[in-house]
Image (tube, rainbow, N blue to C red):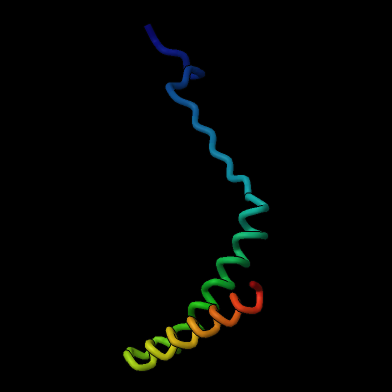
Length: 70
């Protein structure tokens, strides 16, 4: 028996729908985080003394903020 020319084994449909939230919200956020990371890369020089200084100033700033807000 000969099969019909109109009989197909498989049908495949593929559609790509762009996500507005992904492109309008996440795109700029990821770009901003990448830009911030590129700027912060200049701070990572490999100097232990510089890292200790960063920690000191971060701790001092955090304590000042706590005193002001408390």
